[in-house]
Amino acid sequence: MSPLTSTPLVLVDMDGVLVDLEAAFWDAFETAHPAGPRRTDGDRTVFRIDEQLDPQWRDAVRSIMAAPGFFGGLRPVPGAVEALDEMLDEGWDVRICTAPLLHNPTCASDKLASLARHFGQRWAERAVITKDKTLVRGDVLIDDKPVVNGDWTPVWKHVVFAATYNQAAPSPYRMTGWASWRQTLTPLLGRTAA
Ligand SMILES: Cc1cn([C@H]2C[C@H](O)[C@@H](COP(=O)(O)O)O2)c(=O)[nH]c1=O
Ligand SMILES: [Mg+2]
Image (cartoon, rainbow, N blue to C red; front, top):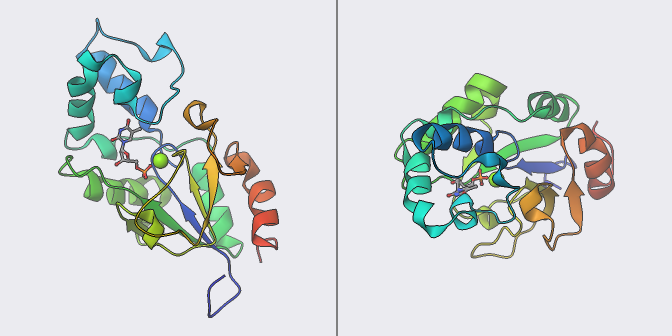
């Protein structure tokens, strides 16, 4: 809880949680490489797409993700817009906590523009963009990465936003989608939203 209020502070990741990186990636990849691997070849079992595919495709994956504008084209995950607004309007303090891809020159600015466009300007103003999420205080971090680590011991609990590639995540806290945010967060934060 915040030292000044009892309002729980919820941190929410972007890629794979609020916006659909996987769909945007495969749309671009399949267009650029029509004879290459397809999204339908199988579910992702590791966090990084380049590590899922044969090594011959790694540069191609990197080049799609490094393209200026790529992160501005990601579409919201179903239910995400409504859930964020509900959490904030009902009394949680909610911040976006997202990592930039440093070799994409417009990644950080595209993420802010995407938040404003799809979620509303107030969400762009609530964004924290950092390579190290352990530096950010909060009660929970909702994130699809199986392990979110950094230079510090985090103060938040990691709520794993469920995906095929994080089924073995060590955190005991798991959210299966935005429809269940209340059931997942309320027991963790000790009270319902105000
Ligand atoms: C799936 C995937 C992700 N990344 C990068 C893209 C972003 O910079 C981060 C994830 O950001 P988040 O908002 O903290 O989710 O990881 C990547 O480089 N390769 C991938 O396959
Ligand atoms: Mg993510």
